Image (tube, rainbow over all chains, first blue to last red; front, side, top):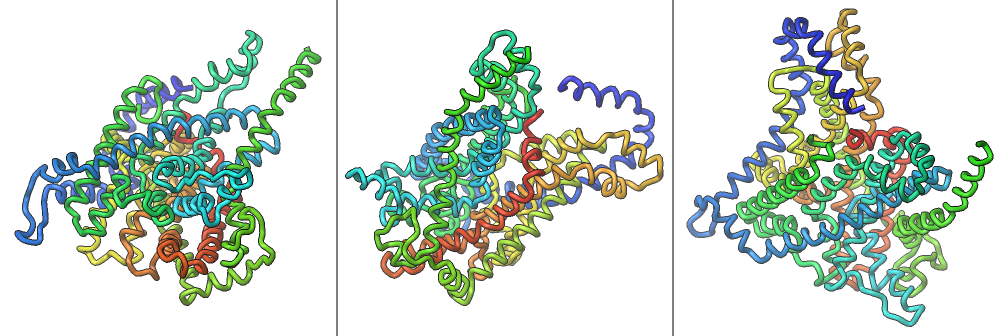
Length: 314
Length: 293
């Protein structure tokens, strides 16, 4: 399948080269005509802001003395600023726990749904996907209600056994509270992607494996998972990008979990606080840009490690 | 042979019973927040804080009363927020999809100078965290006097590099070059070929990208939170966030606000749930586009 896809364009290019060459000039303009509207938006709302953030991050504005060029001063400040470093440390720790948990849940559900394929499985698939349609703000709020001591069922449930329920909005447990919310929100989306990849596998492979004496476990581990590796890599990359720029859920739970979540809990919240609460745009830009660079480097390292599996960028 | 198959099928079905039970538990877990919200949006403040079970209805079920209160609170600002969300999601989502479809088609079906380089840049840009763009975009917009207008939310929403990537992959595989060439031989113009030959074949991917863009902008919180300070321009996510902050901040005075926050949360998710359920035959296949190669 892949080989065919790779070979086809080459063969075609060779056969139609004279025609292509004749029309090359006009065709070039035509191609750009389709891409241009997007390219304009891309330049205006991605390239320009990135360059502008970089530019802003090289200056410092003070009440006395105005704006002055400090070159990498803001970055030196950021990478020695405990608020920023704690935030980075939190999102890295959070990603390290969240991503494996999320992957395990979505992979397990997808494999189960792939094996069952009855009406109940179809219903479950939709219901498990449903949280994806919920705004992160509302999802965080819903779980905030459930965790709440004043109107959540957790306290009730543990109270029935004469115990005090865990306070997932407390400083000690907020990590797990957030972990649960994000897993709930995204596992269904990842599950759908994995499920679609599983459905794309040629089922004669399973028959062949069964004849060779493989059991269900071996089929899952040796056939299904290796064949859907590209989908898993894609999901990992998405999850990594999303988690490192964590913002919505902790921002919303800040009020409900009074005291457990500070204004600089994640790097993105810190950048937001600097820019919009303190009007310190230069330092806010530097933090955003530094965070963007960290995301980029993390993702690239990850892509480099998994590049042999093939997929997305290769 | 047939009997052996029948036996293996029978034993297979028996083995899956634990899986079905496990799946049942998972479904309950994924639905519990919805259930909590459905139950508790029927209660007034007394029912919420009165100590009854939080997972079951109180004695009086008052959806209508709460709905009236929700839509009349602060001169019906909630309805405005819903309208704003719809405006941002539809204009931004449709615009982003249109741009992505055209660009994806251009990248997949036309050879032009700089194509490989621009596509590589596009792929790299998928990794740029969008929130890193919000602060500089805000400052740029405030220079142009665009902050605190609907454009401040709509314009950045038009950017969807991943949508372009999805459309590129799908177009490359679903639209045969021969068909486009045949249309060219018949004398059709390039724009007509795009809209009448290619576009109908791209429908599953188009619906998927549209749904993803609409959901992303309906659910967006960071961008409007930063861009908009006039609460009449808030989308529903920022509006509910605001109410929630007020209600949490003053615990005693905020109790009456909680019942409309809970109902407001429920009402705000209904449109998207309907969209997803009614369009499922498109997106279920479409979501896998980027991951199959």
